[in-house]
Amino acid sequence: MIATLFVHPMEIPAAQAIFWLLPLTFGVALAYRAMRCEDISKVWHETISLFVKILLGMAILAAGFWSVFQIFL
Amino acid sequence: MADQGRSLFQWGLPAVLGWLIPGAGHMLLGQVKRGLIIFVAISALFYTGVAVGGTMTVDRQSEPYWFLAQMGSGAHGLVGWYRQDQVYRELLAEPGFVEAAGRLVDRMPNKQMAIDARLAKRGIALTYPEDNIAHAYTGVAGMLNVLCAFDAAMLALMIGAKKRAARLETQSEGGAA
Image 1 (cartoon, rainbow over the protein chains, first blue to last red):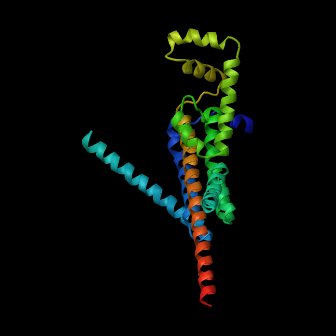
Image 2: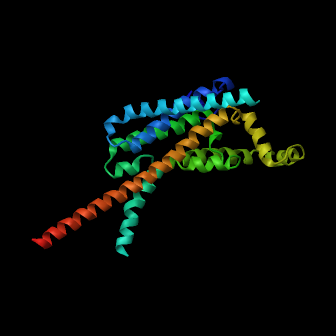
Image 3: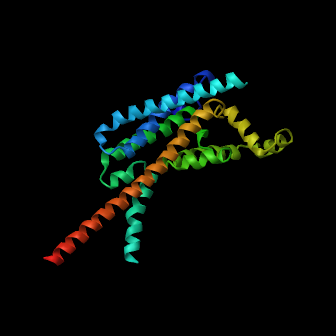
């Protein structure tokens, strides 16, 4: 199972691809906060905070682009 | 000259070690917990990408820009490259492959497409949307690791500067006394 997992690509429906952004965003937030956090004991709190901020930022951007497409196209 | 060499070693070693093994630069500087978190985060991102994309995730031939980003993850990227290169070498060694590729060139723009056709036959060709996800995860892991290695180098310089300042202070206090 594990050998197949790292040799053959997974089969992911195109509609589900967007949800793979969530763990990617969490990983980016964790690695960045691990570097930048002054008090390492607060790293999880700050990671979750950054994760939420990135998601909100992406949602706002998506809403903005959607509005532009609705109005102009 | 000796000071310059020592200074290069001082920030160069954490940078190189941090690139090769994610988080190792920070661990070398005594920040073990920080280094471990960086190691887990970057390794998890990279191997999630490889799990999604399989062997052909790190592909120097057909994805050179993603490959550059993936190489930022050091040993993980090198392992991925080695495995991909093994598959390519196996394909090229298959009997009749070169002749088949030659025939395919008439129908396909280049040899890469002939290789892709063989990869598809083996069930390891990377296609949409798995390619996007796999490349995003591994590429982002590589770029983050470069940032971490740079951070380890900067940290090493700061620690070195603090030590020098403390030494100078001690010397001046000794001189005043």
